[in-house]
Length: 221
Length: 228
Image 1 (spheres, helix red, strand yellow):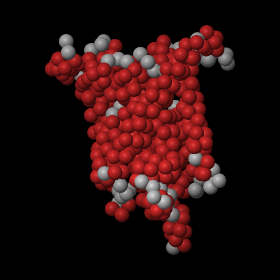
Image 2: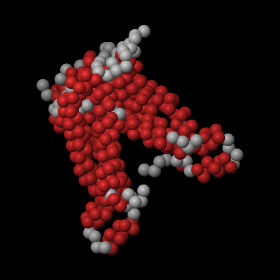
Image 3: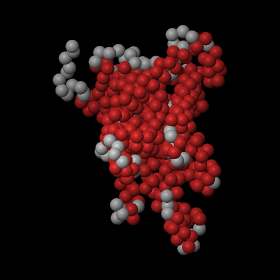
């Protein structure tokens, strides 16, 4: 039987102190990869959702395609993209973005569909054009559903960024991979814990943003 | 050498298809560990979730579990499992770390969907069943379980597909499975092997999804098909 080290030795706090600079750099990397991918995913998804809402028949092939992308394991997608774009940020962003599409498109379409018909009629009656009605009535009212999608997409992306460590990136995933390869517990757990904290903070940030953006919803809750 | 040429070379290499590291052994490792993890995960959480759903408790637990499951990276769960087993003196070449990590991944969607499925059965229906003299076990077996079946199966499908995908990461931790091609492809800068790995892993995940959807449709009673 092995005698386990005293409490405190499981985590090597001095390593964390010595590597604070690197931890900060990886934080920036993690946030950048997540931010770019979710933002890009949102832009593409809004486009796809507009297409799906305008031409109803296209909704099913759009969900099918984004669902197909979503099902492909991330490691496989990174690997597949290597001969096409190389081992770099572009590879990571393409793969990460493709995973956000299914969730975002589904939530945007569901949100817009959930806008009461009476509201649309009122907007029409007030002389709104179709475009003005969409951006000034439907999108704001669909905001809770859209933000819910962005929250899920962001939290999922934070987790997936760790796997980009295999491409030499990874954000906090760099520490997980290093810790795993060197069997160094502290480094690995720092990667895991910080990744969970980042995901949670982002989630809360979006809840706050939603409250600020949709003041009318506050009183009804 | 172009990526395409090295891919052809890898596929036509007899060593890919026979011997100790053949495709057949890799896919067998990948599938058995995934199926085992999903079944064990199901057995561990399903009874608890069923009971919590029946006594109409645990909706908060269901939400918390799904949120935690999403926030903790699967790569992190795998790494923790591997180091925990190393600490216990068990070889990282054994399938245990990946199996335990995959069980931890399979459990949340099954847990949450079972609770939500049971709780979404209209209370009036349960009242009616009780009023007709059904015992609690009968209410559970004859009313709640069949009505919750589509959501329970949906949760199991999500779990299984996620497990198949994450089993790929086992190769990072020295385990075999189809992820070996991708990890070795990266390590050896062998784009042929890398693309081969990507294609077989992608195909297996899609196949698992389609197969499970088929099973889901087959075992769901006609009147209970999920809309859409």
